[in-house]
Length: 362
Image (tube, rainbow, N blue to C red; front, side, top):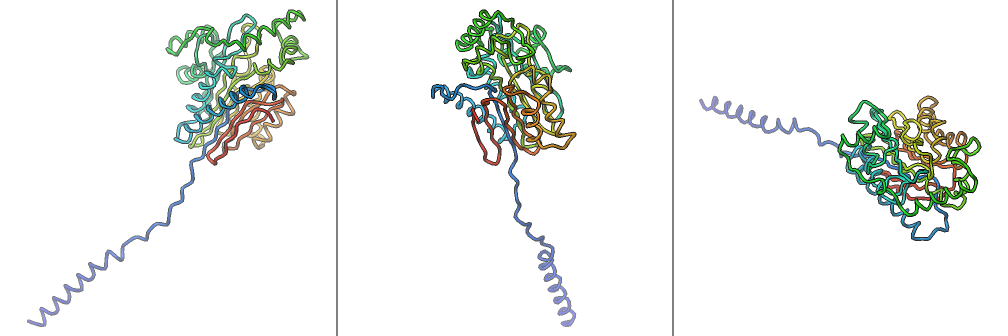
């Protein structure tokens, strides 16, 4: 009997011992420390090719730089918190449209009739969806109307009265045309018209001077008309690797009524594709249309395997003429390019690696 009890006790102890040690045998090894890759994003903005003289008053230079820095900060904050590229470029361009330092929205150039006609476009590199408006007159923020063309219609470009009617249907913010006027832009128009009266030229580009008619070219030599070509734009890559681009402009000072430049032409002034890059252009619209600059930069990358830098340099320095303008761009790896073939370009850039820059001239 005692022997039997002893055997049972030993068996129970063995079982308990086994139960006690079994969990230790099945405990998983602690995982190695995780390494987190910081979310990557990048953003570039421009306030137009054609700049103020280097000897401009310090206050004017500082004002332009502050405007660029503020818009850049807004875009950087949005991307860092995870906003999409397309939301970011729209928001940044809206800021620039509301800033009288630039030629888009408030501060837009006057046409030859003393009115404002505004153009804008936006493109989503993830889907190739795009929207644009041309010749709008009462839309406070044309880039947002362009976004609605992209998202609420099957179309890409609406113009003039049709775009205005669409704005009414979408219930976007409206303002009188005079809302966009500033004394500085009025002075620029007056100077162009005086030059035209002297030279008796018509408001159209010539074969020899495609950038503007000869009267405007003469006025530009004063150093003030160049600043009137301050189209604005923004390109971005978000933390999901998606690209987007947006551009907005008031066009050329003294332009012919109804003139449309490259800004609302997808592939000319604006383009974005996750397969290659996002581009926003600024400068002589007719030249950027003729050479489909924005799309050609992307196409050379996709078809020839060129880097963004090489492709952009070819278009800016080998295809376009001196003083035609410039581009900002980001490729799918987050590489940033800011190139121009004139005296300067209002521009700013930042990325998740800590780079941040605001520049006007070389």
